[in-house]
Image (tube, rainbow, N blue to C red):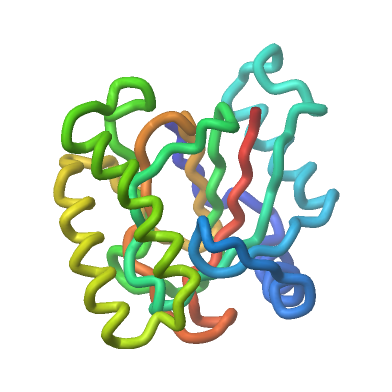
Length: 203
C-alpha cells in the first residue's frame, strides 16, 4: 500500500473539473453509492503516470491496461461505506478532493483478501449485496436510512483493525484491489460539500 500526499500539482483545477463533470455528465449505478463521471484523458494520464512511478512495476502496469477512472461523490444519505473487494482490477487508486472533510470520512483497508474470506464474513458480504442495491435504489428516507445503517453496522463490525487513510485534500492511496476495503462515513448534501474522490482501477 502507498499513501501519497500532494498527489496532483494542480489539485484545485482537478477539483473544479470534477465538480463541473459531475454536474453535467454524471451517471448512477445502484451497485455503488452516489454518482460518477468519467475522468478526462489528460487527468487519467496524470494519475496513471504517477501511480506507475509509485508502484514501480512497469511490467505489471502497461499503459494500455488502465481500466477506468471516475470522479465520484456520495452525500450523507448513503450513510457509511461497506466492505468489498474489486476483482476486476489489480490496484485501486483513490484521490481525495475535499478541501475540508469531517473526521472519519476516509478509506479503510483490511488484511483480509479475496479468496480467503470465509465463514460468517464471506456469507455476510454475499447476502449484503442485495440489501445494498435495494437501498441505493430507494429514496433513502429516514426510515430506510435507519434500517440500512443497522444492517451496515452488523456487517462492518465483522472486520477489525483496518489501516485507516484519512480524508485529506489531494492525498492518494494505492492498494491491492483484492484486499477488503470500504469508505468510512459519507457527508454533505451537494456535489460541493459531499465526499468527493477520484477512483481509478488499474489492471
